[in-house]
Image 1 (cartoon, rainbow, N blue to C red):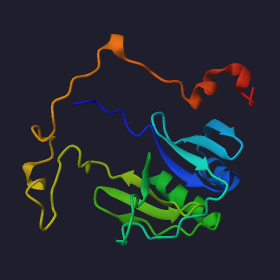
Image 2 (image 1 turned 90 degrees about the vertical axis):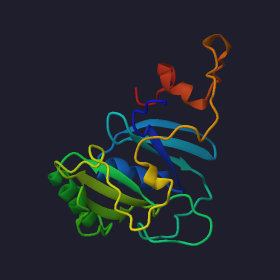
Image 3 (image 1 turned 180 degrees about the horizontal axis):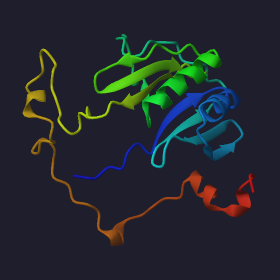
Length: 196
């Protein structure tokens, strides 16, 4: 099995990059670490932590999503409910709540989910956001638990990855691998950096 290092980035959409920057960088304090763009397109990345980022594509005709409360069922095509961003400590959670309230973003009350305490809000694009503080001593990764009243047979096979469901694969030999150039390579060129 591959080993994972966290969420490199979540890619969202905005029609107003300036409002998005003011919210994520200036209100929440997440550094703007990459800005890619050309006419009709921008792709900006904000640092959440040392290993995680959130990114936004700016498309000129994009409009804020229809506001949908976190965790409430919807009908029809859907691929996303909300993103939860972890905070270091309990005081950080209360600080985020105060920042959101002060800026008029109407956060929820602090909700106790047992293993996390959370505050819910929406960014200027109506992206549903949860900010979560992990309760000390209650990390479900250390002791996984299934409390669903009607779990499926697949679920009841346990928390660990199950083998035998997918075909075996052969990893491409190093000598045969090709890597294609992407737009983000410009970030590594100091001559292109407008923030010098």
